Length: 138
Image (tube, rainbow, N blue to C red; front, side):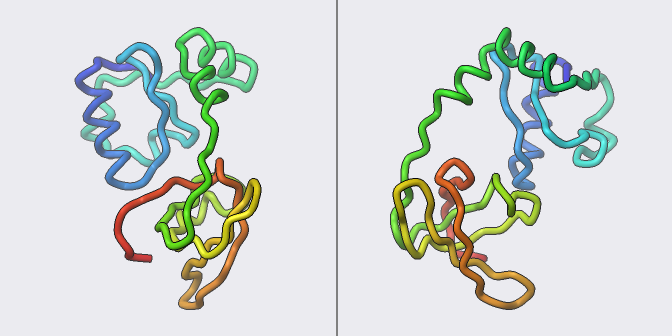
């Protein structure tokens, strides 16, 4: 999406408070979202925004030109520690917006205990598919 840098900052703040993934571009007038912005951003923030839908090839080219692709690819996920609270942001469980506690750590994955439909469940996720969060509310 493309808008003034001030509008982009407001939208980014809104998305972060709702745990919706977005990627900053090198320039302040762009924000990269995986989801359709019309589904996740309220109408009052949508005025003055230009939505640019890109196919995979064009999206990679765009991210390469605006500097975020290199940053995304060069990020090496640090292993979490047992007992840390995490949010699952990728992999098979990304759409469930799960939060949990790291119970075990392997070479590239960790076991996360989370609450699903009122039951404690342990799922294995890759280090790149989690982000460490504060707090202990599942």
